Structures are given as C-alpha cells and as structure tokens.
Length: 138
Image 1 (tube, one colour):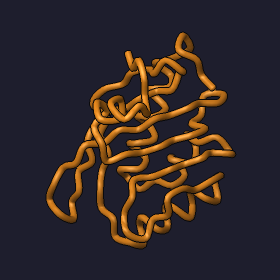
Image 2: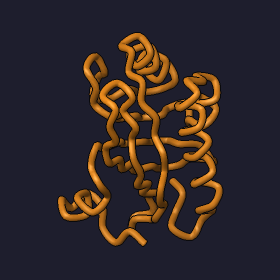
Image 3: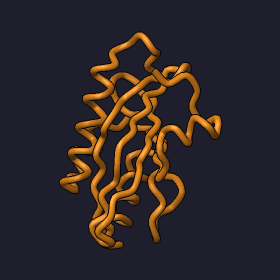
Image 4: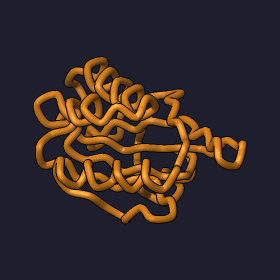
C-alpha cells in the first residue's frame, strides 16, 4: 500500500485517469488502473452488487452498470490522505437519469502504482469522518 509520504501526485493521477476512463465507459482504460487483485465496492445502484474482486469482478460490475443503463459520471473535487495512508477523494456524481448531482467520496489503496482497493460512497467526506471511517485526512 502507498504510504502517506509516497507519490501523492501519482496516486491522484491514477484515480483521475480511472474516473476519465469510467466516464467514457472505457473498460480497458479502467482495467489499466487496477491491480490484478482489485477489491472494489462501488456506488450502490439497482443491479450492482456490494463488492467485486479481481479484473473478472470489474468486468462483471461494468456489465451491470452498462447493462442497467446507469448513466452517471464521477468528478473529483479534492484529494487528501488519511492517517493510515489511504487516498480520500471527494467530489460529485452527476446522475443523468434523474438530472441531479449527489455527493461522492472514495477511499483508495494502491499497490505498485495501481488501485488495489476502492470503496465508493454517496456521502460527503465530512460524514465519513464523523462516522469514523476516515481519520486525520489532510
């Protein structure tokens, strides 16, 4: 896992590239950013499971998202590190199907420059902090 003093810019670039690929529905571009053993807990939408593991899991998730007609985009607005070295991303999700915007937070762990674990929430980062899910984000 990438620690607090290690390549914050690199990790932010990896997540930004992942969001860009997702927003274009570019499966290969997304897979390039994930570790082979990725553990992914996506935003909860109808037809989407609570978690997926490995590249096969990402393909399954992608099929559920695209097959379910979920047309949403993720936009990062800020990046910070938690005390334990995870990258916390705060932003918004544009929900085209309902014409709205929802808050978004994601927690990321990295292995060799790729995303090893990603957990997404329809929750502002401040709420994650109050719930004790992140501490000391800087």
